[in-house]
Length: 125
Image 1 (tube, rainbow, N blue to C red):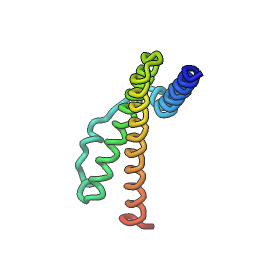
Image 2 (cartoon, helix red, strand yellow):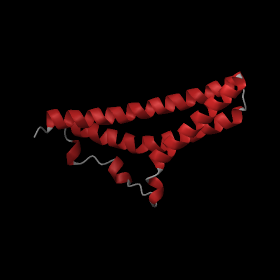
Image 3 (cartoon, rainbow, N blue to C red):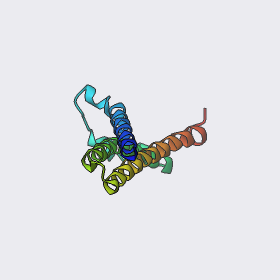
Image 4 (cartoon, rainbow, N blue to C red):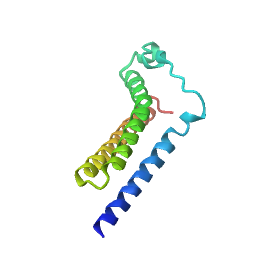
């Protein structure tokens, strides 16, 4: 019975990881991926203040975080599939998925807080 529960949990975690990956990366597959590196390193007039530099840095981090998180979610899915019921390997796969999702939430949260602070304190309307 325990083995069935473990397989069920693994299946649901893998399905959730695939769903999350498709939800995040679905828009990327709509067309060719174009990365303009000048936007990542752009230090023009928008980086003459600390909030402007933070905004540029966080935008670059957010743009890079989604593909990296997608790769790690795929990797954790591979770890789940290759674990074949081994508790140590399943734990490693769970931790990989958990920390990937936590890291993605931290990146998104920091970007959202930066935008909120900039909206309310720097550019109040």
